[in-house]
Length: 307
Image (cartoon, rainbow, N blue to C red):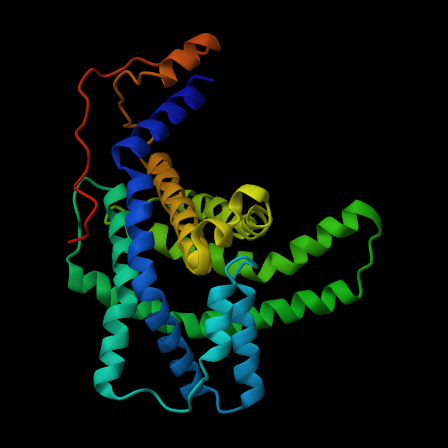
């Protein structure tokens, strides 16, 4: 029990010190300007490698399948943007890469900062890693389609009635997306921090983060259909854009909380925290044992902006 209480205090303290919610809001701002160039870049690369229109449509459907029902503005964009057979000109290509990697640079820098006290890489290195991630999107989509087809074939021969069958169908329909997301988060949490955590820690954190990200699909769709989330009524014609910004914000919160989980697990033994008002009072009310506190409070990490 003492170890659990210590972990909760360390996680909460570092989450507050790293200003994760503020960083998630800043990343949502970056994502709005990077999302559409990024989608255009991915579709252009797909069109260059895939000459068959049927395969191009399958890839588009795979991309749309990764988007929750409430964020239909992205799906509409993907349906509107036609996949070309050639890459854009060199100037347009560089512009798309520069704009598309803006969000990835911010995300990678935030993950790096969560695991350390200062930035370990400069801006150009982060953008270079972002370019690699964009190029890895293509084989990831192929793997997504392959896993989805295999899962579909298996479920055609498996019939389980009742709630168990419904649960199996839900798990099977999201298995491919969960696998790709877990692999992507594992690579980020294992290799982006300068002090790499152990494999099992990175794997555990990536599985939890991927599960939360896949679960966001169902939550976001139901949230948008609820009364308080009628964005079109509140914001009018820009309601779809506001829903997209909110979805990007929640997505960034999930990723950063997963990165903080990874960092907290990796640095658990050496974690020292001061008294935490509010949280410690709740723990005392629950009669839970409090560990010895360190009166030296650490200052916040560097500001939200990336290097």
